[in-house]
Image 1 (cartoon, protein in one colour):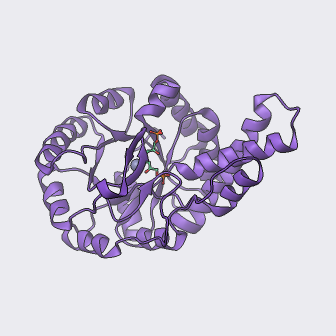
Image 2 (tube, protein in one colour; image 1 turned 45 degrees about the horizontal axis):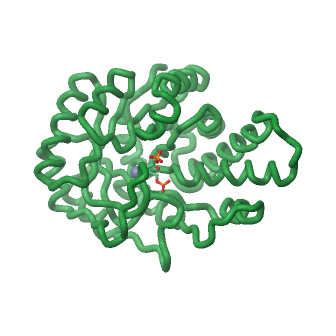
Image 3 (cartoon, rainbow, N blue to C red; image 1 turned 90 degrees about the vertical axis):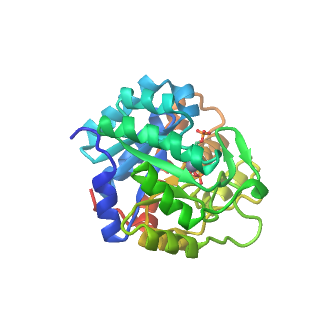
Length: 309
Ligand code: G3H
Ligand code: 13P
Ligand code: ZN
């Protein structure tokens, strides 16, 4: 089976009240760890690449490794550009074989966001590729840009409906209180489900995307801290909130920080227990194994997409 778009995945996820996991990839072990979990749990997957991941790994390596993952697993897998910041970057990824792109012009005023997104939609749809856009602004760190809580703002549901109608976009990331990175909440976690509800009333059956949706799993934070790391106060989105979102209009849940955390926790533990090791396969292998465990947990207990491939 070749790479697929997210169209069919999202239609089934909407109907079934579950979500597809969109996992960020940077290197071979992370790709293998995620795909192994998908194979065991028979789940469709979205593998997503940020522009800094493209710079780090070279797009040619990443796309070829994802093609290998498709061949090896036989799973429905979409290759997605995460937070594309320009028309040219989206076009370049489509030329490289991506089946889905995100154009993130959410920092522009509404009219400009509509204009840029519409241009990407036109090119992408002409080439059989789907498009995600964003409206509203999440707090947190993304591509080395830090958005403070004061500069973040929730999505306006009426604007979301207007945006989707004018751009013809295939899915929309909205801001309801999630944020990027491993330090999401100082106090109690709070998501604006009322905004999600209103958006889905105005846009029936339309797939919504949640960014900044790592749970920052406490057992991995503990492992990092137990083995020489220092991440006091790391805190993510409670899993019951993500399950609730997945049962509503949210069809795609983005996870990067939890994978980083799992990989780092396993590597730190490995070195603490084996200070003389210097073969990268030994510690990267442990990282890969914990990524698989982390993704399996999410597919089964958070996203609800196990068995849906
Ligand atoms: O939302 C951002 C993702 O976590 C990607 O992060 O730009 O550091 O690869 P990155
Ligand atoms: P996290 O930092 O919560 O994993 O979010 C990742 C993300 O939204 C990628 O686009
Ligand atoms: Zn994001």
